[in-house]
Image (cartoon, rainbow, N blue to C red):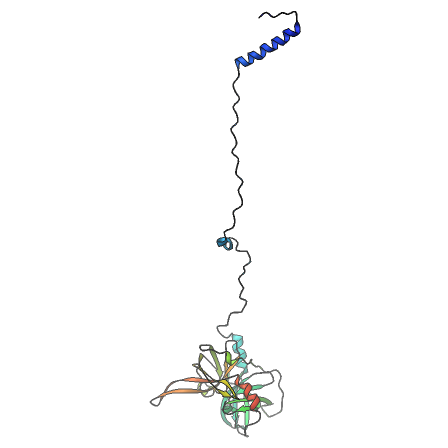
Length: 293
């Protein structure tokens, strides 16, 4: 093809066309396409497993109720033993000339000097001297005189009131050591029992024995069926009568009264202790006011 240079415009256009054709004809290496990038799939958060949800978060609040009741005590504390010791008294029955006749035990139940004991300890004595223990190592010392305010001979319970010092001078105490009265109806078979008192077999100092509730007896009292006996395997003996039987809260629940001995072929080989339930004291207050004749 002949290209005329007489028409410069046409010449330039043709030259550009040849240049383009030359590029197409010779070619260039193709630019490699980029490999596609694999997109990450969006995933939903996993649902919690109900079976393990409580285990995975130990700090999460629990719907279970929390037991806030204090655990029951397994024994008396040293402080409770000291308190019961101070409130457990020896009762010395004397004649008018203060000659000793017999002894028994009792329990102060309020700071004004009210005492619970057996009728067979207190009833019939012209003078009742109250001896108190300062130290478990030492014999109790005479401190007061007391008078009977209520009694019931069949139930064998008497309520005393301190009225004078040991010389007979009238007093009205307000700060004597005492222990609380518990609920003897709450006692169950096997419950622990702790007994304080002054049995002659134990010498002149206060004694402490332990055991459990072994049984019960009931009878009609003031027209109502009531528990009248608590049996125990705790050791009690003569001189313990009228004394102090407490639960593990240190509350008075029974009054040691006697021992039913097991006698075989004339030989005593054991026995069951008999306590008067302290709840009977309310009946004695209602029906047994006055001094025994």
